[in-house]
Length: 270
Picture 1 (cartoon, helix red, strand yellow):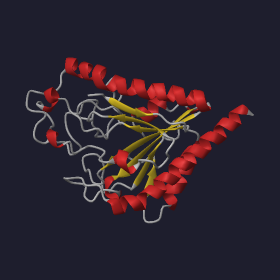
Picture 2 (cartoon, helix red, strand yellow; picture 1 turned 90 degrees about the vertical axis):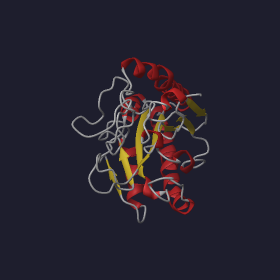
Picture 3 (cartoon, rainbow, N blue to C red; picture 1 turned 30 degrees about the vertical axis):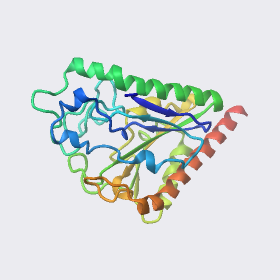
Picture 4 (cartoon, one colour; picture 1 turned 60 degrees about the horizontal axis):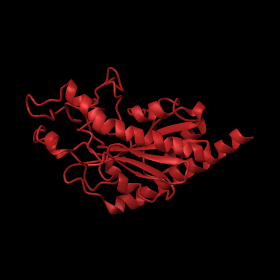
C-alpha cells in the first residue's frame, strides 16, 4: 500500500487530504475491535467533494486511515487542544470516546514509532516536497487542508457544529487577506452557517506549515458532514444533490485563494 497519493498541479494552491484514506494493513486491522473496524471517523468522500474544483491544484492525499496513525497530529504526540477532549496521534478512542482496539492490543511505543516511519513521515515528506516545488514555481503557496466531521459529536463539542469551520490558529498561519476572504465567502453562502477559529482552529498540518512570513500560507476547512452526506451514520453515503449545492461555494473559496496567492507574489516582486 502506498501511504500517499500525489497529483501535481501548477496552481499556487495545494489541497491536503490527510483523513480520507480507508486503507488499514491486515496486521493492524486484526487489532481493531468491532467498533474500530467501522472506521466511522473518516472524512468521508472529501476527495470526491473537492475533485476538479480547481483543476490545476496539487493534491496530497493519505491513503491510510487515521486509526492507523493520524497524519494531522503532531508526531511528538503533543495535544492540539490541551485541556479539551480530542484524539491523539494513534487514537485509542473514537469521536464518541468509544475504545477502538481489542483489549490488550492497544498500540505501544514501538508500534507507534513503526507507524510514524511507514505512514506519517512519508505523507509529510510528500507534502513538504510539493510545498517546495510549488513555492519554487510561484514564490508563494496556499495550503488548504480539507476536512469533515459529523455535526454532532458531544465528546468533542457541545451542540451542533457550524457548516463551515475555518481554522487559521487565530490568524497565525496565513495572511490576513486569506483568512478574511474565506470567511467572507462562507458568511455569504446562503443557508449555511460558519465560524472562524471556533472549536477547530487548524490541526498540526495547518499550524506546522503555515509560515506566512516565508510565503507559505495554510488554512483548514472542517466541513460538517451534514452538508454533503445523505446521513452522518452508516453507510455514510455521498449525497449528489447536497454536494451540487455546496461545491460552488468551495470552488469560490479555492479560486479566491488562487487569486490572492498571485497578488501576494506580485507584491513581493514590487
